[in-house]
Structures are given as structure tokens and as C-alpha cells.
Length: 311
Image 1 (cartoon, rainbow, N blue to C red):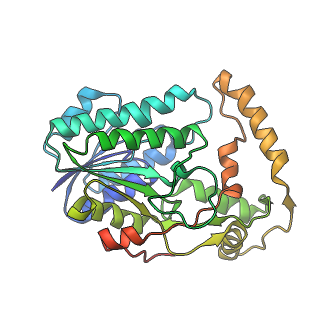
Image 2 (cartoon, rainbow, N blue to C red; image 1 turned 120 degrees about the vertical axis):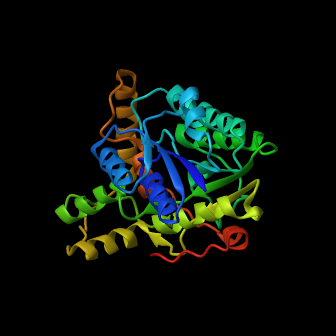
């Protein structure tokens, strides 16, 4: 078995690459090294005997060469956290880039294409339980273009065995985003914004890797959209309290209303984005304090025999 993983130097992609290599697969990982963390992950993959190539999803010739001889493609590359770029940047990567990877996969005769999507396609908090049939209403350019990317994937469903995986908040070894939260809480530089009662249903990255690999292997997952999330539900307050306990400090009792930060983030985005400058605060960062997700993973259990094991 030979697999191709886009976004291979990212948090999830690198863990998936290592998991596939451990399973005995030959792995080609496509990824950039724009940060120290990405460079570190690239070296981890290289040491593990994984072929890492700096090929972007816009490089159609490079994609065609990389996918040759592969059986499965995991597409995880995405524009996600950038707040200093125009909307076109997200569409070029999350929509047209996805189309490029799919075209190369079809032309190479790939058997299965597993597309990493996001619970961000659901947008703002819904009341009640969210499952695969819940209406989508993304409220930022990332969620909008990831949903458009899903539509592109489905267009290839008659030519390739596709599976779309909507991924919940993910944590575990190599997660630089959550590491920042740990560091801020440990330093006493963190406080909760808003009520702190919004829900998070995280998934451990190793559980997610198992789910992604099951989606590629199981015939029942073909042409299906599947939610992958953990079983534990935590409010923001509970999550931050757990982190504070883990790092041996007391969580700050300071609280702040959400609306001043939302206004500030809106202004900073309006000023910084046209200049190509990453704003120090943006609205998507505030989603941690604002959005609630209560996710039904019944379909994952039924089609993938998936049960999360990590907390």
C-alpha cells in the first residue's frame, strides 16, 4: 500500500503520515516548511523513512508526479488561520487546490480519496445535537471555502471512491495551537472571555488518525460524509480548568465580556488585512469562547466501527 498525504507537515497530516508508516505503508507527504514547527515535523517524517516533498496544491505537474503509484490519497492541506490575505487565497487552496488534487488522483487511478473537512462548515452554534444531516451555514471564509471544497469532492464521486470527514477540534502531540493555551495558562496570562459555557467536543489526534485510515479502508465509507469527534464534552471553563490543573497553577478568576474583543477584532481585521498584516486579534480566534458543538458520531460508529479511546 502506498499513500499520499497533502498537508503532511501540518499537525494532523504529520501524525497521519507516521501512523501510516507504522502500519507498513509507503508514504509520500506533501507539505510546506513555513514555520519552525513545520520544519521540525518534516525532520520527524524524514527520520521515519517518509518521502517529504515541498509540492503545493497549485502545482499540477508536481501533484501528478507525486500521486503516481499511490493507492490512497488523504487530502488535508488547507488555508485556515491566515487573516492577512484576501478571500481569493482561501478559495485558491481550499477549492481549486482540492480540485487539482482530485484531478491528479483520478488520472492516476487512485482507489480511495479521503478529504479532511471541518465542523466549521456548520458555522455558529446550533441548538441541539449536530450530525451529518444538520444544515450547514459557515460564517467565515475558511468554513465557506471548506464547504465549497466538499462540493468539489462530491463531483468526483462517480470516478473515485471518496469519503469526506468533518473533523472536530483536535488535540495531542505536536499541536502547536493548543500548546499556546497551555503556555498562557501556566504563565497566568490567560483569562476567560465571555461566560465560558460554550461546549467543545475534542478528538485526540491518534483517534482521528484511526478514523481517517478506517475511512480509506472500509467500503461502507465510500461516497459518505462522516463526523469524527471524541466522546467527552467540555465547556470552555472546564477545559481551561483541566489545563490549569495539568500545569499546576490556578486558573485566573478574571472574566471579560466578549463584545469589546469582538469589536476590537473587527476593527483590527479591517485595518490590517488590506496591508497584508496578520492582526494580533481576529474574530476566528474568539470562536474558542463563542461557539458550541455537540456532535453525534453514530454514523462513524456504524460505518467505521469507530470509538474514541483518548481523552
